[in-house]
Amino acid sequence: MIQELKTLGFFLVRKGHPFSSEIDVEWRISLSLQERKLMFNLTDVQHKCYIVLKMLNRDVINLECITTYHWKTCLFYVIEESSINDWEKNKLWHCIIRCIKLMLRWVKRGFCPNYFIPREKLFDGRMNASWRLISVNVLEELLNVGFKCLLLVKRNNIGDYVRSRGSSEWYKWLQLNSKKVYNEALYYKNTATIEKTLHVFNTAILEQLFNLANGNVVFFVKCIWNILGCIQHACSSPITGHTHYETKQSLSLLLPYIYTCLASNVSAMAIHNQNYQVRDFLLFGSSIYICTSGVVNYLDT
Image 1 (cartoon, rainbow, N blue to C red):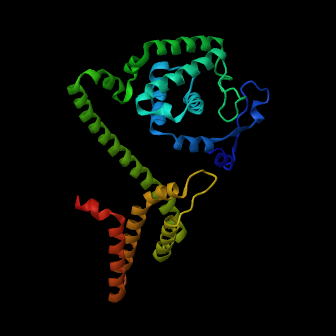
Image 2: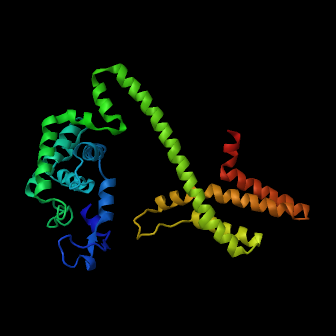
Image 3: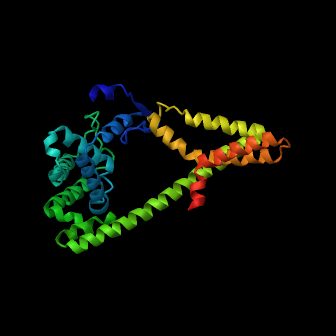
């Protein structure tokens, strides 16, 4: 893993040290690709541990001086200092406690080390003496409360699930309600994605192509056809860190609109064509595009 992370290189970000007199002209090293790789290689229990830490930080700890990035760093160090046997399903809460204890030690020292560059202090500019005292009290109280601190988590019904541990009926009701909330959230998420994709297609693609074609339908169709070919053979751009699969999946959101646009324009060409054989051929092609677009499935429903 270390050798693979070394090959990913690094970014330079225009951000100076908070205590520097030349903060406006300083840059810092960003190893976001390495962080991304490590996060995607977390086990299920490690990932759940990170999610719970984020929830506690948001709803219970709620201090500006301790961020999600600090907890991600804390998780990386705890994973490195433990064995794979420590990350079993029945030891999840134990792993969460280990992370909180490590964060407490860092806060008391006023020093949170960067995972990749340990001498870099992540608390610089955030953790003064007053914030350190407050943070110590909050984290110690969190450890004293123990598992019941999850009752204070407001979102995602976590507190309700903790309360339902002693009631099977309440637990079943929460499960059914959660499925309903999940389906509604998924519907709105898909709707928002479709809306944004359609907006991009209309503004960034169709308008520019139409102006470029200057009223020439054949040229307009040819341009859309070329875009379709580019999407179907999309390659990932290494500078973004996205894989070939991720790039292709994102661009594929445009495909239904492109196929529908092709179908409508080809059918328009067919209607204006006086040659019946050419017209039939174009209409046949248009029907293929409309079927490929998936619009037929929506019409059926």
